[in-house]
Image (cartoon, rainbow, N blue to C red):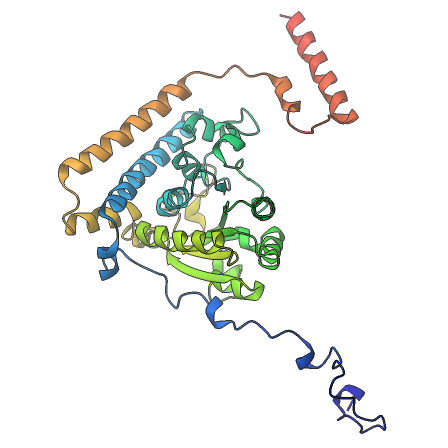
Length: 388
């Protein structure tokens, strides 16, 4: 038995007066603990398509989500083809994850911010950014292809989860300025194993920042299955440890993702704190064009997930509900093909690049080292031009 285990007065000192503040190690000296029950995620992933809940949704919204899904699938196919043609250096396809991508863009207001990872170019395009600009980084042409401020969309983040703390910082700053801007950070299941992810959630919860974290759990961090990354019941359960709400949703059900994310964004916007949403989905294509997915997963597994394809789920639901006919399907496909044709045309011309732009927008005031590097490159370019 230690001194802390002994009852008051057992070792001689008189009991403390009732009005005296109890010692900090006693439970009643601390603030009441948060009840974890309201923070716990859904018992099963939320689903809407094919259920009675779908009848309450706006048919126009469902048809819009369908058109976005069809366009997104064609976008992924065309970008993958551009990689095979050498027009892109690398492309991490979001084929199979389109419901998460289009819903993430659709739930945000124009003044909200999106923080994508490297696999989220479809979300960026759905936000309104031109496909050529959205894929510029993956083409190897520039640090980013668009003006982040103009589109309220941060550059693609290749390092895992580093965009998550940035989202928290922006959301907190926006609230300090008195605006109701919300930041939405997109993270993969592999990103949840990174320190940046945990730091972001902790800061977001402590600050009560208006930020939503959407974890697209596609089952693998490249080749590492989720079971070797986390022993948590779900990734959404991680929210409870930080004191924020966790939600679990079927990531291939575009209507469900849109509904859950809409509720999460409203929760954050109204000042009730951040939300962590886990969308259970699947990457049908390889990690990138340089990956051999057959080394770590079976064709049977992929085939099973193809039966839960987000595009087919939405089309099947709309047809069964009498909200989609052959003409509408053809119209969506034609619009998607026009997008693919525009991508082919824009990528057919090699861009005129200025190597000296590498040094722009790195620091507000260039460092001596950066100036030295710029001078060295400028000298090399002059020598190269003189030798022609």
